[in-house]
Amino acid sequence: MKKVAFHNLGCKVNSYEMDAMLQELKAHGYHIVSFDEQADIYIVNTCTVTNMADRKSRQMLHKAKKMNPKAVVVAVGCYVQADAEGVRNDDAVDLIVGNNKKKDLVPILESFLQGIEEESVIDINHTNEYEEMQLTQTQEHTRAYIKIQDGCNQFCSYCLIPYARGRVRSRKKADIISEITGLIKAGYQEFVLTGIHISSYGVDFKDSDENLLSLMQEIDALEGMKRLRLGSFEPRIITQEFVDGLKQLKHLCPHFHLSLQSGCEATLKRMNRHYTPEEYLAGVKRLRAAFEHPAITTDVIVGFPGETEEEFKITYDFLKEVGFYEMHIFKYSKRNGTRAAVMENQVPEQVKTKRSNILLEMEAKDSALFREYYIGKEVEVLFEEEKEINGTSYWVGHTREYVKVATPSNGSSMENVITTGIITGVLEDEVFLFA
Image (cartoon, rainbow, N blue to C red; front, side, top):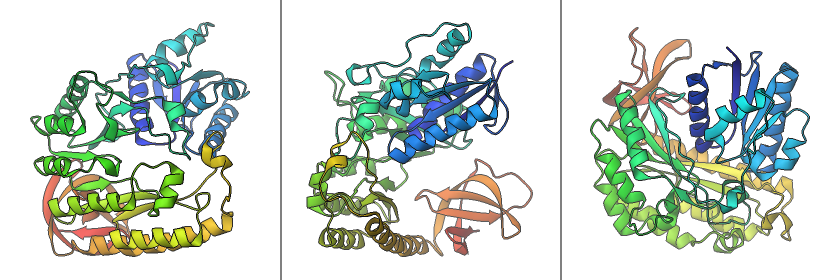
């Protein structure tokens, strides 16, 4: 029985696909071990969202070969897709597998072990095929991420992902429903819809009016459904009709990650983002009118080429006006092959760091303010893991708004248990006490 070690980099879509590949490997008799153990085969599911992601992918591939020079090192995914020739010529890599070929990992690997090399990288930009995979279990035991689409048609000026993932390809609703139904029976309590650009779900279906909302409505109605979340989605989808539909969903968690990137219209135009700050704010207001104290989170890029002090101040004021639960702050990283990489007026690194620190300070205050709202209020919690905090054992989980809470362990397992109670105060940092 060959030992296989794996390491996953990047987004939740990558995590989903890694789970699917591991499932297939186990089904074919491979023994899965930790990446830190010596193995016969090492699989690195790579990322290429930034130059740093490329570097991390290379580092993990070289680490694998160093751990066992005789092992087969397999590079899989986005970094491979973006630079197949470069990865193929890396001495640490024995086999490459691109996107839309992950479902075929086992036969590709077994052919390679028999001395036969198959074509394992397709022209991702000229395929309409959605790469269907079906999960029966995941690395997590309580929450399942469900991939509903792949690819992106947006072509933001800083992003290489459309070239690594191809155009929008939506998964058949029947396959999504089948997978979730099976996972509900397996005991999963919460489902998160994820993809490269989930707002585009259904746009590629011919002669069909299926979209993200109609998909969610059918999932929400499944027997045994307890919790449903959305992954990151675009502000343009938040029409009044869309919000009215969300409000009718019985199991939807009021936790919305709306990608922003900048609060300045001029910066958004250079990024090739297709909305204005005013349109974004209007969507936020619709959500807050429909749900009581919803968690609204976002991504922000600081130091984008051409971002002046005035533009940064506009973004700062906009973020303050919105008041997010959480903001993921990223310093702009030049990505070779994108339009932004060759734009004039690149912002110095020290300026990016200064602006990032300013926004991180705002984020910490706004996040604490959001969580403090729940002190003394009754909430529903899904408990996920037992953890030691300040020398005491606690069960830790999340509310529907994704606020982390903990309750003292009483010796019995609370894993995958949903219960209601009162948040009584702060335990540590971002963890609140639950009783």
